Image (cartoon, rainbow, N blue to C red):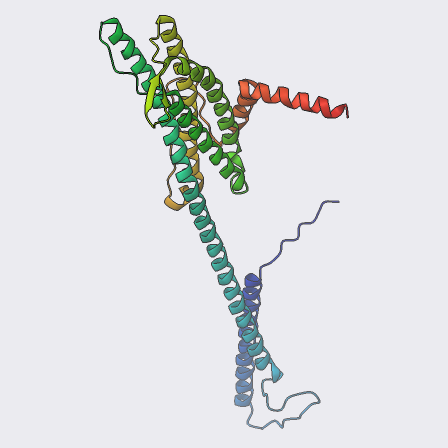
Length: 339
């Protein structure tokens, strides 16, 4: 047997239908009155002999048209009730609209507040990433210049850059990324799609860390070190003159570090785009275009569901971070399975 679909009728439509029926009934009643009146007048005109009125049981002598006396009052009462119902419905509908508007306004305010919390953290992470990258580039440039001056017979001043300061910049940049990841976890319920950025940033931080340690070890050999004496004076030691092999190694390690930091900076740019589109697009009615890198192999992080699946597969299966994470999970599962 086919399922029967019962379509509910709204209170407003029901009230309108009832009111129309009342108007129709009232019109019919008026028409009946007119017909009875005309008939009576015609009868009186045709006969000069008055016809005595005989009352019957149940007939209202006060209503010469034969209509029950309570019809008019009933129509009036029902019209009042229907009108009241329509007013109540309209007030309820207006209240619901106001509540929905207030709810949406609250959501927009919350989105703006969340973006205002993300924005300084994102700006801090971007600036510290740039600072660490710039310092690594400056080290390479000044070490190269220092060597060139030595080869030309000039005795240059010691290099100003220090491995300790580079390490400080490096870890400050990494900690700022960790602060961003904590924000993702704090507001995950607002936009679960941002979880892909957590994955991308974790993979990027892994690559940055892997390139940092060999570079740091090399800088401890090449760069001078400031040692504070007991009398408060600072003495510069380890003023090593790098040879061609050391310089080549430095170029390679700095390049690897900059590439890893560059990927991280690009992901931060993508995050800024998505944060604006998620939290500000409805407020301003605009959307920010995604990054379009020249390198076709570069990854652009997006919360587009079609892209998220592809990106997650890449980070979890094709990056060192993903492979190490999978190996660690397998090892831990194996340990617990034996207990």
